[in-house]
Image (cartoon, rainbow, N blue to C red; front, side):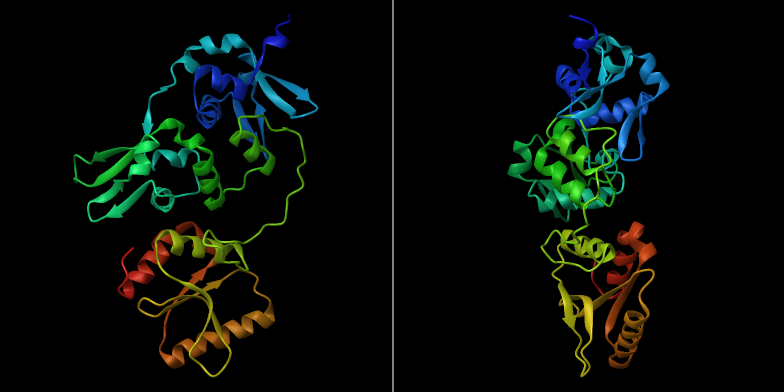
Length: 301
């Protein structure tokens, strides 16, 4: 059998090392052996030096393979297999999500819940390896997880859906089942479906981000709620608690829609309604913008 026949895909190597697949991909990227080019992983010159190469199959397309000897590499063997991670540590894999967002997502899945003491572990969370911890500095409760939690199919699926990071659909599906993506597949992008976690069908990605934030913050909200006005105006979101309206202002709003939104803004003023406006450039700091806006109206989240 030739050396080429003995080479392992990255997923097969992860199984050999008993590592979460995503941890190995992230580690090889940190070491500079692989890098992202567009929607795919590619070998660097360092990765090629360590024995990495490409293989092509009719089923998986083109993917990276490694010689079995790479298992003995000092850098690979130094990976901490038993390391536990927090929500902040999971940001390494979902870099567009804040730790607070990840904590809320884990709570929505039933792994933990928020109390005045902090994040408390549930029975279901214990079954997935969660451990209750307490901060030495503040005494606040938090939860640590086994590193392989990032490969749990449900958790990986939900965090990927909630992340505004754009991954190649083929690669996302391949990694979730431990298979290799086609590195050179053009992968025609499917039309984006703006559906919130709670099932609301939204008009824009900005609305989806706001809807998901409200849902994960456990705030009851309506979508396209009519204003208490004679004219037929509708708020993007309405929070019955404290009667707060939220409107999203995307970039490049068509002239006809802009005219209606400006008229609606005047209605808010005339009726002295509580309203929060979210702009397109606020999407990266929704925690700050929405948190501050709600706090001004007496809601703390």
